[in-house]
Length: 174
Image (cartoon, rainbow, N blue to C red; front, side, top):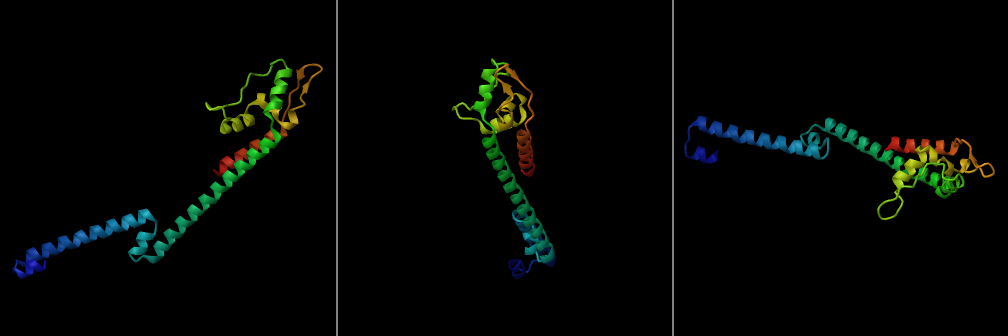
């Protein structure tokens, strides 16, 4: 613009160049505000001088992420506690003993293993909570088999129900 003024350019040309430069600056400022707001909601408002709106967005965002983090941590803790509860109250060897004593009348259910031979935890813990044929591994159902008659009685496991409730709570938090 200064160069145009020195060369005595027509006033309409100088005004047009000023408009273009001002428009470019506004577009860059808008882009900068957009990028700041995308990076941290509220930061663009703070940068542009709208302090109340910026602080409000920043507070809402912080509260949202804090709540998410707390629920996620609680979900993992509940899931871990449920697995420890299952480990203390479920015995796959006990299920296999009942299965052997019944002459394999129970469904042939192998516990889930990965290709490397390790137990697939996720599927294992899911199965012992849902599959009825695995109920005889729960502590309160291990004696449901009468070795004299060879009859397996129907068993409802309160321990398994407690475990299912714990798993549900953990999944809901996650």
